[in-house]
Length: 118
Image 1 (cartoon, one colour):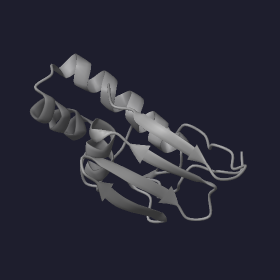
Image 2 (cartoon, helix red, strand yellow):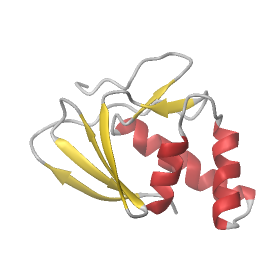
Image 3 (cartoon, one colour):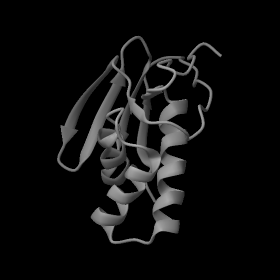
Image 4 (cartoon, rainbow, N blue to C red):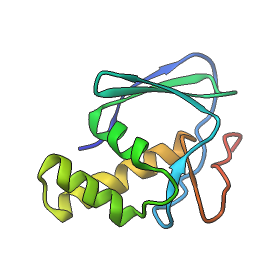
């Protein structure tokens, strides 16, 4: 399953709200990121937390370009991992929900990131 492997607290930031799974998610513009082999290190400017995304979560997150729908992301997972639609959907939906809570995604349709001060 796609997941965030490590979360390292560097302060007392609070997670935001879950934004659901509709629309065309895209990476938040205020996230500084660096590829680490098959993983990705991501840091949201102004937050107190750095995240390490595992290979599957990194694939999903880097594929969030604002043009791909959730169904497109499911197809990316199916192609990359050779898994069926049901499994890919469960992984993508869970991963997107977590990425939204962490403030690493915004939805292209509304253009608003999750509120990190909730």
